[in-house]
Image (cartoon, rainbow, N blue to C red; front, side, top):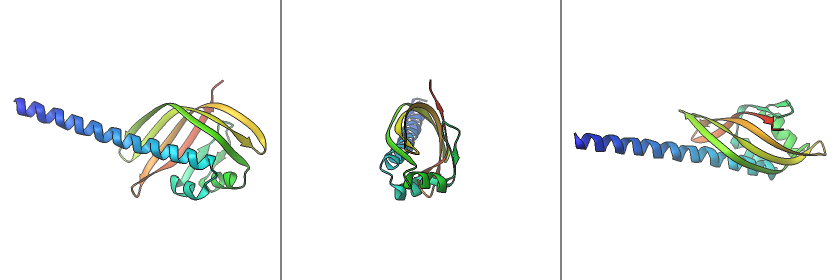
Length: 141
């Protein structure tokens, strides 16, 4: 009986640690994506964004992967600062849902913006790498 309880506790511990490790990988991917966006590193973004990406900005502008990368590459959209806080990750197999708050500063068509956003990001594991498949953000007044 005691051995069975020990095995059960060990199993729960190992599953919890695996989940935490995977959640950290998702958050590392998101941090790498934010970093690539602020550096206008479209080469990195091509691997961090899924081919079927839907990116919905807080102003309701909707972009595909190609459109999002083009906006960053041309300087139409420049991210100067992206600071994440209050983040939560929930995983469902090879899919992860991230919710958080993001402080963003930059330029949109040469006009300055500085926003505090609440967001939902959906990542999918594809060929051993997490990729963003959907983004939607809302301004926090």
